[in-house]
Image 1 (spheres, one colour):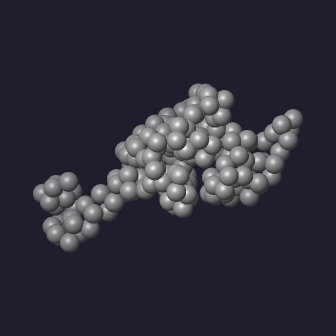
Image 2 (image 1 turned 90 degrees about the horizontal axis):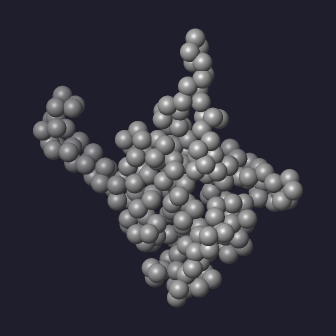
Length: 198
């Protein structure tokens, strides 16, 4: 953004405000690239955050979810085989994958949504009576095209679905992803074999 654009948008000119806003925008855009995630992970989060800021909520949600899933899968693959990680097509985002990550010391409690007090109980649920944690449920819904539960009811019109129906979910994933990516970066920094990118 140029100073002239900033001035025309705000109606005023303040070089300090312009510099502060430009710095904040840069820090926001560079957040994930500065973490120890590697390009194969940080771009999902970076593009998700860009989509979120631009109001592209469906794209934001799915990219955040893919970034989280990929980060779990790749980190576990690196733990299993640091020199040549292999991503198993069977190990996708699930309660089981999250439990495996917890067993390996990853801070999976950060994958609980705000107010999801039964996160641990859901993870412990038996296969016959399995209840997915919210992140897994959301991933299954969105990545398999189940948008019915995100419709909004408008009086005199009925149920509708627009990308704005996903705004609140996108905001939750935005917040969760920032916490998760930072904690995962710290985890990788503390484990020498993971601090090197594959």
